[in-house]
Image (cartoon, rainbow, N blue to C red; front, side, top):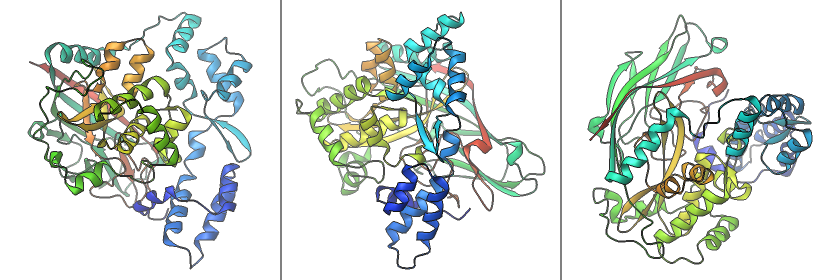
Amino acid sequence: MNAFHYEDIKNLACGMPEDIEQRKAAGDLKGTARLIDRWLTRPDLPEVLRGKLRAERAMLEILPHDYPYSFQEVYSLVKKKLPDMTVKEFLDLQDAGRISWMFLNGEERFFSDTVDTLLDDPAMKERSCRLLGEPFVRYSPSRMCVQASVKRMIEKGEDTVRFRIRHSLRIKDEAFRPNEKVRVWLPIPKPCQQIEGSSIQILTTSDNNYVLAPENAPQRTIMYETSLSENRDFFVEYEYINHSVYHDLWRDEKNDLRGSERAAADPLHHFSKEFYIAYLSEEYPHIRFTPFMRALANEITKDSDSPLEKARDIYLYITTKVRYSYMRSYYGVENLGEYAAVNRKGDCGIQALMFITLCRICGIPARWQSGNGVHDKDMGSHDWAQFYVEPYGWLFCDPSYGGGAWANGDEVRHRFYFGNLDAFRMVANDHFQRQFTPAPVFIRSDPYDNQSGEAEYPDHALRGWEFSAKKEVLEHEIKG
């Protein structure tokens, strides 16, 4: 595996030569790779096109793992959870965009998370439980702590929770190389609006030889570098305190609200040139002001004047029009924000990028935040957004949690996630598409986000199917 130029990712926004595009569109991965390699031998190739081709070449090995199933294989898996599913209904769902598929090497292949995507629909989940004679539970008991945090915030105006967490990564035995140097990165909390830096404590580590990324790293990690004679876990235990404050942005639905204190401690309030560049501009390839996105932003917000009203219009559009859907690897999509808008589906990160893009088009500063959603015993990868409006300063927006609440008929939580986050979060990142500190040599399994961990040998990076990550909530304590 060749060393990866991280800045090549931006060039995914560029076009490719027609012959390469045609083979890629036909699902001819080997032919696409062959043509890319041939084009890359040309000495007079513009560097932007060379970067585009290198980035596309790295993408090709991921797609077969995201779409592993034939029709018969995926249909059999669906039938185990939905025994009454007919072929006609399956094909109708496929045509409706509810089942993700792709032509690869001349064959129709189906998404690895097809079953989970279908069952994320409350109606489908209830149907499956009824057919299998299982109790239908709308919300997992392990996640009731999140709803409890929402309730406390609405009633008390805030919520504070102390967490102790263990995050581990293990290279799968079939990918393990004894006595060979390996580097492993695990996400750790970073100081942010909800988490005071002084509350973050690294308690235990699997290895003494490690590097902690600085607190201001856009994607914060602990990195181990060692050689193992026998396979074992890499892990870190840490604790931190999350303090979340509630803002009711629905008291007056026609006017830009006043009366809440601005986040005066945020140094970005001064609207420097750097602020505008960072939070109001495009970031290729996934935050793009394309003609479609500009037109959509104008259509959604045409009846609103203030920034807060426009942000709320965008949130309502996403949460009621864009269906939550599990996604293939982000690196397999060339414009994530527009993907959600055009296909009207996407997971938490893609919905967040859609929100950020539309806000910036409307002149509303917006930025990324991510890490994990915390439950009673474990954590799950999760992404959301922030947006800036006077007189509040930076506010939160979680379109996927808000959309899930809307789909379940929970208007209280639907309104809550415009302006607020529950306190059950671990924040590791405040930027999307940023390199680690210290940086890997090769392209990461997820080159955009930092939620589960990464690993690499001296000659290649490990992909997501070559290692497993575990996230355990050892303690959580409600404070105050």
